[in-house]
Image 1 (cartoon, rainbow over the protein chains, first blue to last red):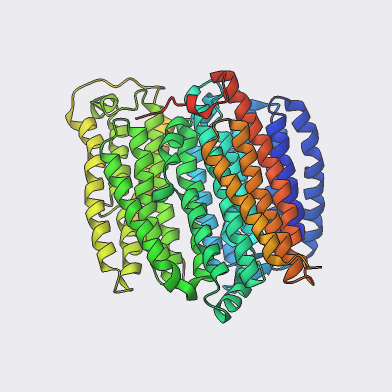
Image 2: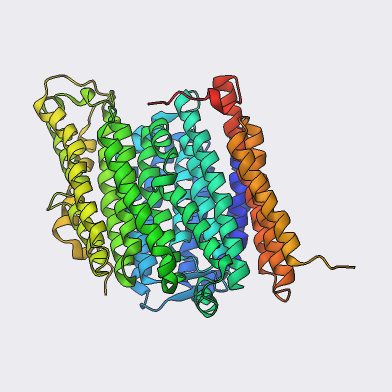
Length: 508
Length: 104
């Protein structure tokens, strides 16, 4: 029941954050109460054996601390970095002590498995890279620096719930904790018309899809008599063709397609990713989206796996449409930021392949794909925020002015396009391999390869502009030594993902 | 006297759900769209409670889910109002048709 209490506190917290947008001291004062509560939970669970609970508590306390730094905005960035290192250490420790047996926590609300821990670790790593690359640019968005960082932590908290839920209630709460901070982050550039429009569109679409998701869960509850995704397997199998269950699954597919921006429900994506401040687009398009994907695949591979004859064709059609619309529309974009938004739709098409794959392979390939895609996209956005003009012409001649920036951008784009020796190649290889095992999905794989070839066109347009066109791009800010080192490290990670993928794969 | 059965309640919730979707798709006023979303969520609440009461009254799963939906809907609404107020300050309107800076 502790998770419920915690989640409620988070809900109340988000509400306060929305209402008291400007009352910084009030937020500080109110944050003491949950901090004390979490301290209490921490002490009580430390006496028990559940190390995961401890990490959850530590994370919660740290979030509170971060909120408490609201007053001293100059400390927010450094506190965030320290917290991220603590989180990474906690995650690695959890994997070390985990004995490969799924562990049920909080009255079967959460089910910690090796795959969820591994996903947690890799996504925390990607978020850490994001913070290290972008913390200066995050501070330029507005005055409420500590809030931005804490909202990023809230998103990560949603991710942790989504990677290990065992109950549809937890899934719903996880999705809300993941989404609501994203609505706020999209609108964080308060005086920018595009930003507030993006936040409105994101909110409306998000709330609408949440409604559909809940309807799906309700119908499924009527058919399966339970919210537990493991018990559901037996219930649904016994009365296989219950129309309630089929309708529920369909509703859930539609709602998740909204969340991961798959094709018929992708309309909000370009506008939201274009309008939101670039630094936050980088986070929403990578970590936020990967978390929704992981939840999607977890639900479908755990609960509805035996019913796959009923939904696999729908998913195949959605995949096909997503690949087609994402790639073809990306070709016609003039702004690189908008092109990356469409490219994220196209990449979602590839990630949907993991859903079509067989069981252990699907989970493994989504974790790897999400990591490779997230890190490359974060790196590309980090280059993008340095340049003032987001159009292709704005990148003309970047290689002359900032050779290193152009070089790392090339590597990131190679990875996104799936050129060998980069992470993107191995990721695409693994997702397609999983579907190849099916045998009757060969047409989809061939179609995906064709679309990957098209994607090379618009990614290479950027490289062409940087290396072969004349011009002197205006920079937003000076590229310091720190930026260069961080970009090189990110670039190295992308290359490592392609050269030694086994280090990043789920062991076993 | 006929008892009110599960299907009657489900009919009400289904009607409410589609009224919500209809309102969401046709209304252009942001507040009204927000209300439509709330209608959808409330129809889901009715669904949960009906299933809980008529099918498995010995457990309280559905009721608890409803409580969570109400709480989170409130949280969401507060964020929504903040977004709408911010939008009104920038655009001086709450008509979604007029919020169209991004067109391609």
